[in-house]
Image (cartoon, rainbow, N blue to C red):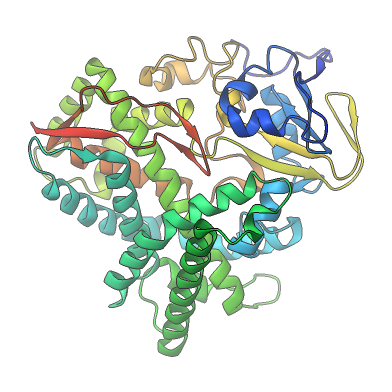
Length: 452
């Protein structure tokens, strides 16, 4: 397989998506069956034109084109309808900020994810994974999706707020965040903006959850400001951050928006991917057996620590392959800031670009047998043949997920800690299918823990 483009200029295929409806364009297809519809488009062309309502939108279906978009953040800035719906919720954080603000924020937030900080957060991960492993009971079914959501919520909240307020903070995050995520997704899919203004119970529940999170975060930031103490957590790192250009600090509003962003990104995405990992392991006993052999050899029955992560190579490959098949950030958007060309095709300023890792990860040209769960495709001798830019679970370029190492560390420790004690078996008759929501959810996943 080629790892770079041919030296001759490629002849790109430009196509229009089928099934356009008056006024709605292709929005109904994306609302009803987004994964199936988007996955059908690469067969038509390398760059496919859609309409979301009346908005001109393009889906790049080749890694070279995706990389061109993601690596040129000035021309293809964060934007589009999803961003505009997310801004009232997340403010001007790393996900929603424009190019200039994002560049400054990224420089200032990056130290919060330095290797030394990750090692500190990993101790929180170890404690929470051990507590989770102790809480399961043989033969008593658990909803793995709920369990992973609870685990990642506790890890993220404790990594953010290492204070005496942590128990209350964790409980509030666990209570409010799922409500906020569901509401945010409903609003993102509504091209009219009418749903958010209707007097629905779901809207009242969403508004109340959002208010509670805002109040919680503001209260904790105020407490940290008054103490002036570095407590070794993410919030302390954000408050200590200084701009290299002028020495300025993040304002309380900026810190608040980053905390909201990190909560959303740190809980929902990792929980979704871990849920899929358990489903895939149950369906592939040979992969599961190798996982058990590795954790037995490396851990010998103890809870894994940060120092164990490099030795848990098969465990990491399992999660890497899970992210390929079921990337939590299954789709995100960019918007052109000026007239440009993509695949030799002119794009006016204000054109929306859809990026779908789910689509790219399942194109046979780049991943042979793309529907097959094969962690060994990430062995060093095979991974070197993966086409550059075809693996995108964390994005790429200046907007690549800032918490990628945090998430991979957390997932590796969680899989190892729980697999060293338990094997999970599906409840008979339970079915699983991807739900393209704010992240790529498996929905309810009842499984029975069996002690090893």
